[in-house]
Image (cartoon, rainbow, N blue to C red; front, side, top):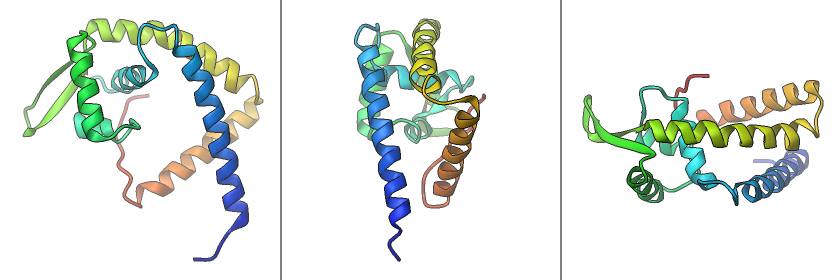
Length: 155
């Protein structure tokens, strides 16, 4: 495969921007009642009204399967999620938000959305934001044919 310097530079810029944003968001979460990783699981589940299989949830969380399993166990002990067997596949586990988990996700989510509006929306115009979303969606879609898993979530 031929080297593409422009692609490499674009990736580097994207990775550095994401790193800078994630550091800022992690700082924002220092005073929250849940960690950013826990919030990520809560948010993902909030978009899956009937819950999500653990393996499908793993496709959208940047943790290994064993780490996610341990995190979900802790979240269940904290009353944030409920795990149950999948009626269509006895080997699978379905994870759903509890009312407490949903309430925390909404409360923390409002503050996180404000931080996103500030950090991302404050740096880009509406047109640039639309372009960024289109490009990110295009990149993600291109990866789906390369073995990346996907999960359907409600908007």
